[in-house]
Length: 194
Image 1 (cartoon, rainbow, N blue to C red):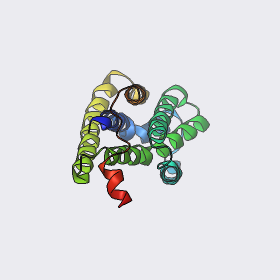
Image 2: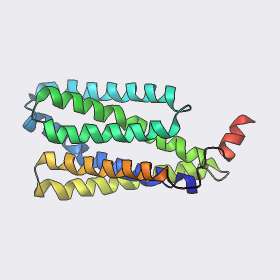
Image 3: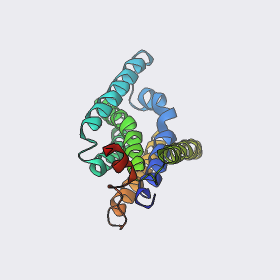
């Protein structure tokens, strides 16, 4: 899966970034953005609706623009997280950036899974397991990162750490485009054509 090399670390880094701060969303929107506790449910509905919309939009574009869809999903996550860090004190901005973060959540996993399937070495079950393993390792690492950052910085610091980690995932993806060994035409594509 040499061509998938950028997708796997990007999956790990972006899931780590998300989980470094996702447990603190309620604290951020309540303590930093100033939303009353009764509105938090509505914010999570908006987050979830954005996730569904992101999956729908990405699904429509994924086959035509697979690498761009992956990079766009990770970049959207970075903008959402860094926006929550930088402008989370403004309630309107907090909603906008929370929706962006939600809009990227499903597409990040979906696009990395697609990339891994295109680079499968003849067995898609290995690609699926590799992607899930990378994603789950990222979740565990991100939770640890968030736990380390929170006592050293305020809740916004977890979104900064996550946003910077997501920017790193974008750099890996963009750098991976410069590497030889792309695997867009491979056994998965050949099997799908049969």
